[in-house]
Length: 202
Image 1 (cartoon, rainbow, N blue to C red):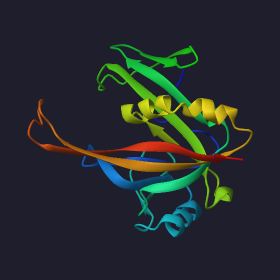
Image 2 (spheres, rainbow, N blue to C red):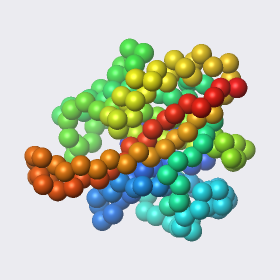
Image 3 (cartoon, helix red, strand yellow):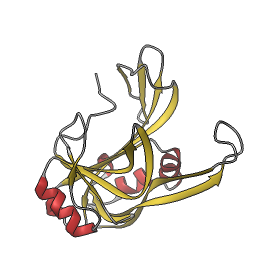
Image 4 (cartoon, helix red, strand yellow):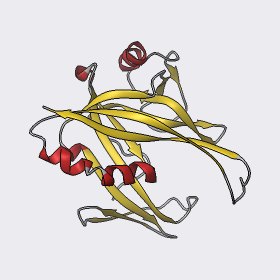
C-alpha cells in the first residue's frame, strides 16, 4: 500500500514546491518554496537562495517549517536514474491504480474528494549543487508539461547512461494565457511548472 499524497523519501531533509495553500486554494508560485523539519536546514536555504525568513505553516507532516525563497531556478545534483521516478495515476471511485513506466502496478486507497482520471506523477530526489552536504531534497510534480518534457528529452535514459552524478538545473517555467472556455473563460490564467535540464555528468 502506498500513500500518494504525503509519502516522501525517508532520508530527505526537505522538499521543493511550486505552489502554496492560500485559504484552502492552491496558488502557483514564481519562486521555489522549501519545506523542512529542521530549522538549521531552513536557515541554510535562506542563506543560499534568499527570500522570506523561515516560518511555521500548518501541515500534517513533519516538514512544518517553510521558506519562500527568492530563486526561480537552482542547480542540483542528481545521483543516477533511480532518483527520477515517473508514473501514471488513475483515481477511480473506490481505488487508485498506479502504473509505473516499468510496467509495475500498485493499488492504494483513494481520496474520494479528488476527481477521477489519469494524471502523471514525477518524483525527483537530489542534492543542492551549492551545498551538497546539506542533504537530500525531493520534488513531486503532477505537471503534464514536466512529464512531457522529460519524455521528449529522454532524461531518464541520459541519467542512466551517465557514469556518475549529473549536474542539472531545476527551473520554474511561467505560463500565461487567456482561457477560452470553462468557468474561467475570458480570464487570464497564470501558473508555473518545473523544468529539469541536465547540464553535465561526472
